[in-house]
Image (tube, rainbow, N blue to C red; front, side, top):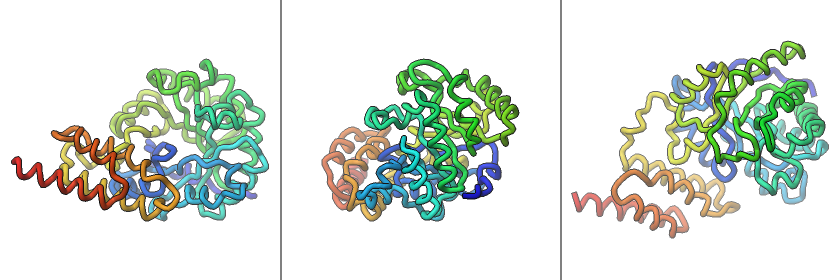
Length: 338
């Protein structure tokens, strides 16, 4: 397919983007984030959404109908990128074509996930050990879609080896490059190596000149706590943007720079928690376990008197009606004590 003009080149800098996280950044939560982070408005964000990562092999299998739900999105999430993983170029080609049919703005290839079940398939971080296959996978996505294809990866597998690894990706002219600043071996057990980013940025830019590539956005990932923190890291490192992941838990206001997170009252947090829960039930309740929501409750419900007890009680609930009743009891008890 003839490549479409990359939306990446028209985005503001610095870039603040949302990390793809399995069983976290589903279509329900992304819709909540878009609303409460004021996506598309001044000082709002994120600038780009990612789906959860989806198996290219699975999308080519008889059971793909359930997986297709992971590729659902709303118009207010644009630009949105479908993140795929896989080690079969033919299936990646077909999955990329499907992403065009679904109306995505771009495709991202996951080449950094350390999950053992993903690596057994030769995907995720295992790609770092097989750079020729990695190139074939990127090429398949590009040829199958014509969309801008970006890559998310790490600085190495068992050791820091980005100087050896990144040139293979850059040869494929990706539309953007996100680098998780840890090796696969390090998982998330050590601080992200942001001190390496200035050298990585210089290396990537010089390599792109050598290859005659357009300068794509370079995005850093790992331990980014807030948009303000992201601005500091971007300024120090010279990269174009930062990806925020774990900081979004319980905080759909994360990308709204006009919002003082310390002033969000408890009732507002609970209101959004319930809205999120009902949206999850409506969009995904027929195919996903309600237990997925409970990891969000741990983040929404903390930092106030009685939070631990309320969290314990919420963990026992099985639907939004029970959650709503438990919160009402908590608030009524709180008011009567006051």
